[in-house]
Length: 154
Image (cartoon, rainbow, N blue to C red):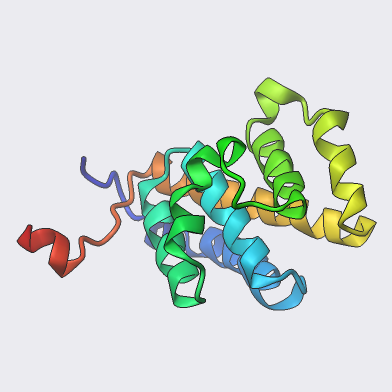
């Protein structure tokens, strides 16, 4: 697969706008890094974004998240490694990322209230929206993730 073009060079003002949203998520939202990793990695898996999955796995590892926690995320429904708070969050990530299929049902929203404030739920939803924007850019323009040297040697 080959990249179609570089959207960031083609429309730097658009990149600047999306980057500002990302800056908010990373530096101003106040969300725990672990939760941001959970959101970004799960949404990227759902959207089939190899570029973002590669990036967010590396970021999660860098922040000390375990390999098992990362590896089992694609099958989170089946694994007890995720606690009730993370499961509530993951249910919302799935529902919002697949919004055309789910309609963001009450059954996905209600569990959030047990663990998060209204402000946190709003920030979580903005974070889900932000990674979905990045995923659509990366998949739409077929941006290619870097190949690690160890993978090239294999």
